[in-house]
Every structure is written in C-alpha cells, then in structure tokens.
Length: 551
Image (cartoon, rainbow, N blue to C red; front, side, top):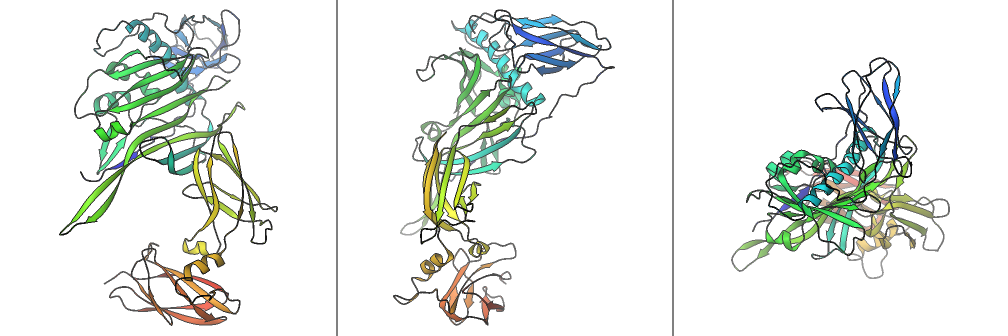
C-alpha cells in the first residue's frame, strides 16, 4: 500500500464575543436563579428568552452569584432556564415595558440524573431496556453542553492555547517526541471548535480526503447539542468503568452505518456528584485494521469554573502517520511505508475573563541554571526547547524559567548570535520529561560556537590541530537559493574546494589570516561561477551566499 499522509484540522475560529441586544428604550429582564432546597445561587444556568413560536431570541448565563440580565423587547413571551442536575423551568415573562423587570427563578435539584424526560430523537434505533434512562441522561447532557456553548458565545476569554503533535512509541501511550506551538495572540478567545456541523458529520462522516491528505475530525459541544446529532445517533447507558468513580456515561453509536463513511462511537461522561460534564471519548469506526490496532480516536474534556463558565480545556486525536523509504532490491527500487501512532491536539494553558476569573492549567515548569566552562553563571543565554515555541533567557544570575510545559519529553538547544545567522543551533545538555504540576531543576554548561567549530572540523584537521586560534580566522557559511532554502551540490572554493551537502553548509577549516579579505568562488551546476568577497575581521566569520538557479 502507498504512503498515507494524515492531518487533523483543529477547526479553531473566532466566535462572536457577545450577543447583540436590540433594546427598546432601556428594557431588560434581570433576576436570580437559586436552589429550592438550600437557597444558594446557581451559577452557569442557561437563561433563554423565546418568542411565541418558541424561537430563541437571546440567551445568557447566570454568573457566580446566580444572577442574570438580558435585554427585553415586545417579541419575548417566555423564559426557559436549564442547568445540568436541575429540573428545567419554563416561565411566562411579563410584557416588555420601559425600565427593568425582575424575575427570580427557583430550580429543583434532581435526586438522580436519570429522571424520566421526554426527548425527541429522529434516529431509528433498536429497543433497549435502558432507553428511557439514556434519554433522561441525554436531556441532562444537553443542559451541560448548552452551558459550554453559551459561555463561549457570551463570555469569551483571553487564552494562551497550546497545540501539539506527538509521535508515540509503538502503539502505546508513551511519547517518543513532540512538537508544541504556543498561541497567545489577541484573537485567541476559543479553544476547540468542530469544523463541521452535526448534520454534515452525520451525512459526510468524520474524515475528509483533501488532495491526498486524510483529515480526521472530532465533535464539540455544539455538535453533540445539535438535533442533527441526535437524529443520526442512538444512545444508551455505558457500562461502569472502575477508573471513573461517580461518573455515568452516555454512549452513542451511529444509527446507520455506510461503507464509505468514517463515523465515531463513544461516550459523554458526566460526574454525578459535581453534576458536571467531564469528557467525550470516542473511536473512529469504518477505518482499516491499522487504525483499529492503534486505537484511533480522540478525547475532548470540559472544565467547569466557579463563575458558572464551562469550557473545553483539552482535546486530542489519535491517528496513524506514515514514513516512506526506498528499498534497493536486486533489480528494482521498492517504496516501503512504515507506520507510527501520532496524537494531535491542544490544551488551554491559561484563560482570563472580564469578571476577573482566571484559569491556569496544571502544567510543568523548567527551572534551569546556565554555567560557562569555568562553572560561573552565564546571563543572557537563550535556551529553547527543540521543536517547540518554549524558550527562556537567563537573568543576571544565570537562571531562567519556562512555564506551561505540556507533559512529555524535551531537549534543550542554545541560540548563538553568530551561528544563528546560518540556522545553526547548539545542542544543550538539557533533556527531561515534564509532568503536570511539577518543576524540573536543571544545571547545564552552555555550548559555544567554539565547541561547534572544533566538532565540525575535527574530521579534516591533522590530529591535535585546533581550528580556533586567536591569531587566525575560521570561516563557515551556507549556500541558499533566492527563497532562502539550502542548496545541495554547489562547488565552493577558496584555497581548497568543497561541495555543499543537503544542508547547504560549507567549512574552511585551514587557518586564514585575520584582518584580510578573501574571495569565495561558487558554482551551481552549469551556471557561471560567481565570486563573493568576505572580510576576515574576527576569529569566527559566517556568511550566507545566494546562488542563481541552475541552467
């Protein structure tokens, strides 16, 4: 089978930051939502105003004090209030008048999340003994999902969002290596949002083939809340899981399977004590055996805050990646694909709301001390973590700290101001595995450009010779094209001649005289030879040379 290329679209986009209120005069409806038993305020209840046909006009969440305030107009007829763990309320609203109208709501806590309710589902599903319980749990799940959706619409947060790609070891859960990108721009106000509607997922499935790339998707709160999802899936109560005490799962499976459509099946888990959504776990169905063996699927988790806001705080998709190799046989070349498990996803590291509420994820931290070869602290050293956006610079005491580290393995690299011009970074002796809520302490000796010179020239210099001499110059460079990409196979000549490798680098390790000017000759294929003059005004000189296209 040929190689497969898989990508996951996170589908993150900006949602309107507030509901536009059309006011007539200064009319609004406000009040408190409280528990009928203990009279405590209920945060995170969804207050929805509807017209005479039942169409939603606007909606809002109750805050930490259980209070709400929504705009009124002459079309409003009723107010619906839902909150997971409570019996829904449907109340007639007073006629809109100039000024403010108070309407307090008392909600009754449910003794069980399986209280019978009427749920209309369009899917044709087989009869089950737990169907009534599943419908009851579905009603409560939808109340919890509504809180998530309305919180994102009406109370957006400023977020620091982390996105990652992890290569796993074998088919297991141990991370071999990972890439992490940090998004903290002004526009980041949502975490994970699905790229298709529920109706499109039911119709088209959870995978899309795009120019040879297979893109896999996952559901979010909007999808599970949508009637389109209910119409296409059947629900039942999940078997208990030992690792999930006090949780109950609402399992879902596609009502109608099609051979050419990739579906999902899984469960939405709810904490029966806290009366909160916990997560969605799912697996892909309709995929080939490699995906089944790799346990391809995903997980999307929810976080409930004290002010009633519920957000998606973590998400990942477990898929298969592929590497291709060319194998030389006796009489032919064969392309062979090797497969590996890959996880793509993200996490909210930090979120802040306008009411002063903040959320900080329990992530790892690196605390490091940088020393020179004499053992003295080195200020101003920039340490990066390879294949990530994580970096820090040492202070006057040689100390740096890098927070918000996703769990997993990391290695350090140091940016030298000269070598960085050629895209060369130095491997730092810093390797560790980050864990949630823990700080890793490390001390390392800072590698230098001199160390790089010695290593690069060791193979071409006589035994015992040192390319670094205060009275001479060492010259290195990179050959690139007009777009800055390294060029392989360019002939580069000074006194000696060398040919650039795939990284476009060249080295002149013989001693050159300080405070002189030399002319480097380069030739790419059949293109004319070109010359570049270089001033040797320091012990280490770096130069980037741009060459024309081949003829």
